[in-house]
Image (cartoon, rainbow, N blue to C red; front, side, top):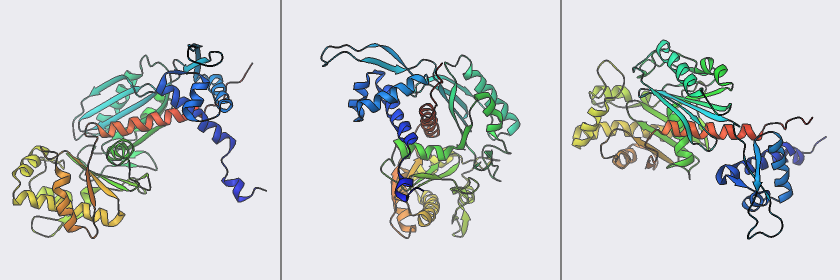
Length: 383
């Protein structure tokens, strides 16, 4: 019978995987290192590092590449190790109003192959599905190794239980439903992790952008669509069906002073594209550029929705991804209206990752998952 303390103690397998991950991280960063180099860089004992190097070598993840230059070293020169050729790649795909972007990455994050394919927006599953498949097939041609991990970012909510893209009544992108994993899993040979584009962007800001110092943050995307990513306790909150953070449906103030959903309020201001629920970014930029009473009313409507979300989840800060204003100063301009509407002070920050933030987040997770898979591999059987 194990004691509570023993149950809390990390297993030997977990400790081995963590050590293997440290070795892999150092080789990805430096290229080629000896066991002594890795021990010095990680602070882990050389015998423990040697065991990790042995395991990774037996599983084909790393390989010997000769002897280190012995000059300046005490004792005999050590053997250099590096990542083995052909060990694997990561697959990333984005689908949204801008089109479909498909990438193949090496394990350092270098883009080995990339393709862009336009799609009409809004679009349908019958149009989008074949593009996802054909673009995946194209980047996989000549891939220097198996796909170890795959992520897909889409400009629609994703039902986390089924992986199905959820059609909302006023979706500006996908007009019906689609399950990307059903199209891609067999082709790629790994389960595809599918998520909403704003969730991927929130992850990018939390790991490498304006929110690296925060555990509880709201990421607010203001562009052709409206989106909200919730990072609470350091992890993404998606909701039961993946619909958490649908900013367009939050009640705020309309032009007549009555309660309206935010997207409806923006429509009342004439800021939607004709025949679409997508926001007319050019019209929005022109209105905000006037800095008049009409602009103030739009800012107040957006601030009211943000203040409601802040009252519900109590974040340390709200990160504003501004794709509306020509001066990229929306975080500053919203600070006053949000403070007036919120029951408690709310800090606003401008997003730092302004180009392809969903792709940055999807790449980050695909690479992390690929690295985890490498260090979890069992050693090859010896003959």
